[in-house]
Length: 224
Image 1 (tube, rainbow, N blue to C red):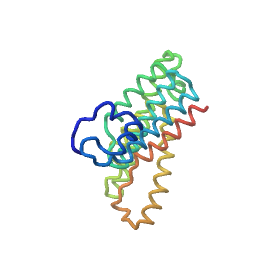
Image 2 (cartoon, rainbow, N blue to C red):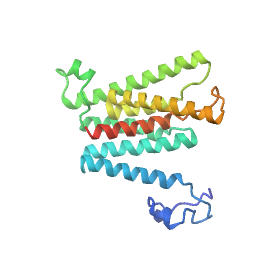
Image 3 (spheres, rainbow, N blue to C red):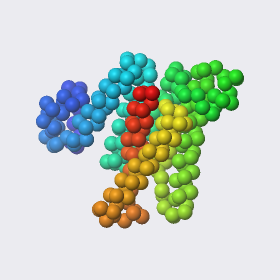
Image 4 (cartoon, rainbow, N blue to C red):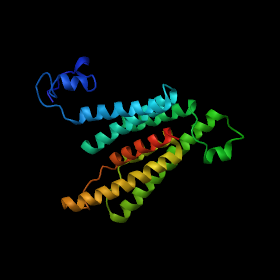
């Protein structure tokens, strides 16, 4: 908060937080606990990915996706934002990885396998998953918003699902949407009831639930 630049030795995950005693070196304000939690969660996820996949390009792909999920979960929960650097940047990264690491063959492969090579098919599956999944969640949010007369879904969620589709294909994006929606609905209703919130105006950080669901989908995918 004092706007002082952070030196590299004060930005080492977990270690710097411990050495600084959880406080800024300059102004001594307390550093929010979310920082070491995010760093620890990211490190644990990286370790799990490498344990299952080894030091491979596929491990790099899923480790990057996991880091994006964790960052988006934290930012949407606290700030109610899903930064384009993660959603759109992740979309581009997912498409690049699709060119080098084959995506699961689904709808596009059934139609175009005789016309396209393996890399083109994989990239096409990623594009198809990103477009269909993001289009579906946008349409659902749009129709529900029209029916209820509210802004039911932020466009950041749509871009996030497009990013998931680029990395995991249509099946992975749909699994993430279903798990995230179920978790968000159940936990949101319980919280609204217990806290006696007005459900018409209460904001549910859907991106956070999508991020947690995405982590679960990735872990199930790398164990297959």
